[in-house]
Structures are given as C-alpha cells and as structure tokens.
Image (tube, rainbow, N blue to C red):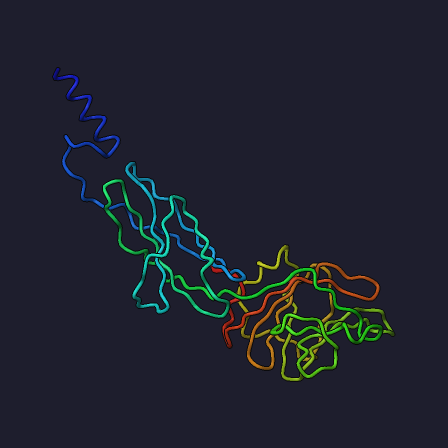
Length: 252
C-alpha cells in the first residue's frame, strides 16, 4: 500500500498534475528569443520553445505602443505564430507568455519586438526603355509597371546601346539607389543602410544582386533581379509604406 502511494506521488511529480500533490503556483519561464519576420499583410513571430514538463501553451500579445497596453490576440502550442490581423504600414508591438496545465502564466517576454508589414511582389518584368518605353519603369507605391519617363517612376531599366550593359536608373533626381550585392533571396536585405548610395543615379543590373531604393518622398524599397534577358529584366520587390522606416524585412 505504501509503495503504491509512493509510486502515485512520483507519477504526480513527473506529470505536474495531481490532487494529492501540493498545488503548483510556479509559472513557466518567460519565453526568450522572440523575433519577427515582416510580411505582406502579415507578421510572423518566432521564439525558443519552453521545456517545462507541465508546459501547456503560449499567449501572443499585441499593442500599438511599446509601453502597452498589450492584449491577447491568440494562443498556440508551437513557438511560432502568424498574425494576419495587421495592415501594411502600421507598426505593431508584440510579447509572448508561456502558461502551464495549472494556468500559471509567465511574465511578458522581455525583447522589444515590433514590426511594420509592407507590400511585396514577384516576377515583375521591366523592359529596356529604348525598345518598350511604356513598360520600362516601376512605381513601388502603386505596385505597377509604367512608362520610364513619368514623374512618379521610381526606377527604370535600360540596356546601354553602345556596350549592351544593362542598368537600373532612378526615375527622379531626388531618389537614391545602391547595389547591395549578391543575395540568395529578397529576405537577405533587412534594413536600408544610411550610406552607400550611388552618386551616378544608376547601377549596373546584375542577375542575383539585390538593390535598395530610397524614393524621393522618403520611402524605402528593395528588389532582387531574378533574370536578365536580351531586352528585359525580371525582379522580386518589397516596399515600406511607412515613411522613413528603413525596415524592409526581418529582425534576426
């Protein structure tokens, strides 16, 4: 009989739930490593998993201000959550808590995690303006291909006739551009830097390179050249509609 009670108590301590045991009032550890990935109309959140035996799940909190108040928007058992209830250009602040089977909840995560979702697009084709002038330019704010010489054109594509070298030109003298170098994916560019802008008003177009644009009206954008053809280039792009916000994708 005594052995049975000892075994029952041992099982209780291992499982974390039993009326015979002392009540558990200790909350799980505060989640750590919380970070976000900026999306188009969504924000993806990641953090390190909790390891408590009586762990039950996480609560995801969100606020419009860093100091709060924070409100629960979802619960999840995995250390990952996608917030689809966001608007591009709005900045959101996040925190995560962990709770156990006894409904003990940790404090809010300590990291200052905020994100501003932004639009993006894929497989946009710009044509050499010497050949197809009406489809050589791109306007990031309107997400559209347009004539190269419109005042609202941010960038346009050119294959220089004398050398056949492809270039990306700025469409407004107050717009800046720079070559970020080779990247594997558009998400490899996270923030727009403060320096490094081309003083020429153009950059050589190189397949596989990423580029950053600082538009004349103080918005940041980026694109990756996926393909260069005999008279066109194909690119993926993203645009931050929050003025002056250099965040272009993710915080590691």
